[in-house]
Length: 112
Image (cartoon, rainbow, N blue to C red; front, side, top):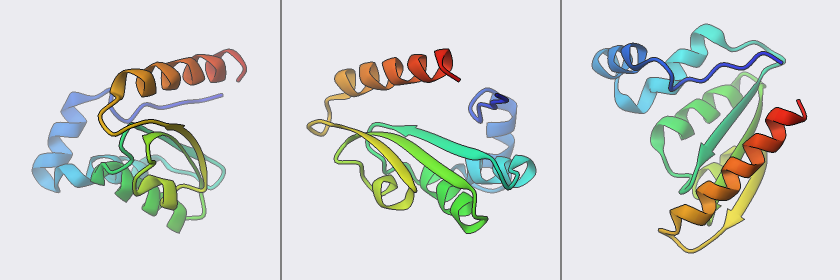
């Protein structure tokens, strides 16, 4: 499995946020990398980060598979992602959501 993290390059994020906007930092990176059979996985406690929402909408428009690990009530990404894994919690309960997301990511990494 080939995986790319879109948050690893501070230089890329800074350049895109300066040239475009912070809300486009993931979408612009996907424009250069995304292929038809790829999966875009977003991870968000609130599901309302505009930069993630924009990336998922872009991926959906291309017909690419999208999935999201979400918390709280799932936010906007709950309705935009084709596949979701929701850790329901009260708004602001980041700890339990992040712990569950971490366990899920470890499981995926071990079973990929």
